[in-house]
Length: 94
Ligand SMILES: [Zn+2]
Figure 1: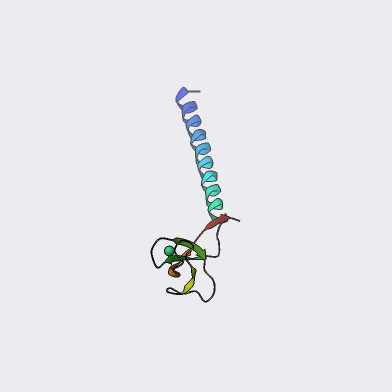
Figure 2: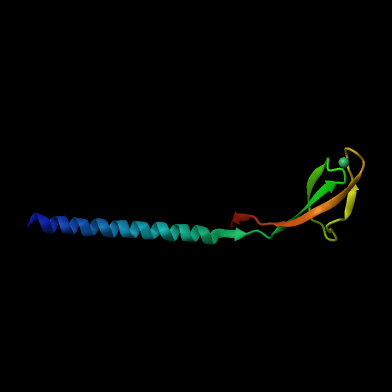
């Protein structure tokens, strides 16, 4: 058997192995991507003191709106207002 034919057969086998390896790797990462599930979004409210000396994040509650007074500043006893509300998206594995 000429050596060139053996070399070609080896090359074809190697190419096939590589092809299936790559393909299974791709399928795996694709499945992992599918497993990632979007968590129901959280709403965060930024609460800020009128005097700008205190900022805190809190979980958005029904009825919250920008400008709403939510309490008293623990530092200067001024009013705490909701400065901004934003949605937070997180992902987790199923
Ligand atoms: Zn304050």
